[in-house]
Image (cartoon, rainbow, N blue to C red):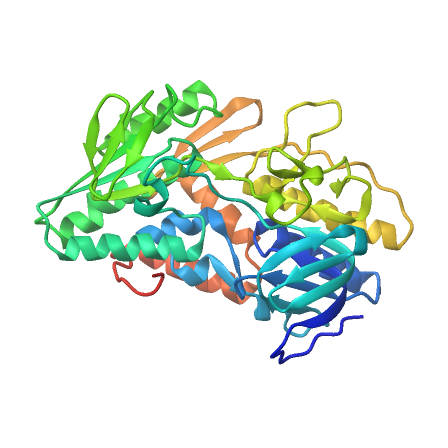
Length: 417
């Protein structure tokens, strides 16, 4: 059972039955399913969620938070709300080190001893050691980063410039979604609210196409949509340096008032565990998502490195994988507790949902069935809405999203710095 002091002036030795590290999509999903299954099976085990924030973040919506299309509270859920009227707990603190051999996690609040642990600490932004990239670029990996981008963009607009140039580094999923959202914002709301400012938006992509993981026909639809929104794409372009007011490419220099970095993922598993547990900067997991031979310690989401049996391709670092793994680990843990065997984890994507600005999306389903337009955008919003907990929350979000179709986005700079 858990033994946590509500007020801690000094570091304490704490203990819990099941410890979840990280409150992203994977961490939230495993908590949600595990809490329900524990109650259903009348298993007396307590869960503790640990995160450096006191909220769960739904990262796929953060680019819309940055543009004001979605309110911050629609992309976040209080951890206190999740554990309300349950026997479970949450702690807001940073994870410092994981010692699975002795079932202990070192945190800013002290050591936590566990019976089972699920590591879902995600990933970060990889700037590839490019000079000035970290200092002079924005990103949208966290809520604070998304709000920081929105606030600084508004500040620049309020200074009444004649031209504002926005450059997005990276043309993968995130880069396309950010470009689509900001260009849609510029084409409609900002054009009306800041008529004195001409806004140009570019994507700098190192590859020869956009979203290389998708079928060619989907890529063509994405490129055509971006061009229609006024986005200029620089293909086969690599960045040498980022400065405050410009980007230096291999063959040219681009002026830049706002630079958004969407080019890479930083895998930092070695920051938490011994490097022997790592593969490609992620935690190597077996077919049951357990780390090495540590049958009581799991890893899911971006931080986990594994693959389906008889396949070589490692799991992609996307929300769909984290959600599927979260469901599986909850099921696997319960099976262990009731002494029941289950099959190894197998991931099979249901499809890709990609919004490209307001009221337009591209959906790639199995067998390369491709949908594009308003229905694809609506389908993506609906899938995300179903993921959110609570009927009242869903109703509030539906009302807000519907009203936003008929008015201006939230062009107000508050918080996030």
